[in-house]
Image 1 (cartoon, rainbow, N blue to C red):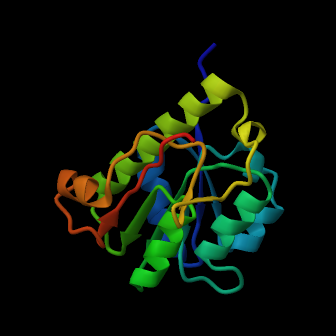
Image 2 (cartoon, helix red, strand yellow):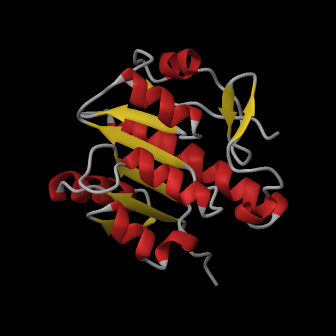
Length: 183
């Protein structure tokens, strides 16, 4: 029997952006579930099955940062990738400090997003296979302060934003992907 491909949830209030990301993710062989709002995603049964979440930052109701915090507060350690048409350094820092694995400004290079998705899924599956369910592995709160920085417990390996930006031929604010080591 073939293994079930990972499920990528996509949350974006812009139907064109949501459909474009869905088509890209499906072309990689992953399953997708799409939502037009953070509230719809949080109310769904998909949240517990999601391997990676791609969400827009600016949305009515809960924004992408609030969605990221909501899933963490519910005990999920799902890798989160944020995309935005309205880049802001404060939002980027907040997202990455809260454990986001990627932060992309729209429009973004598909190849950069693909690399981020694949790395996030690999990290999530390694974490799941080595420690059981990710949400069950947290013995500390999902956000643990150490030296003034918030660390995520379930993602690996560690690359600096500038190292990753260089790999993707982007400046740090354009494609800022930060991985955390396990604590």
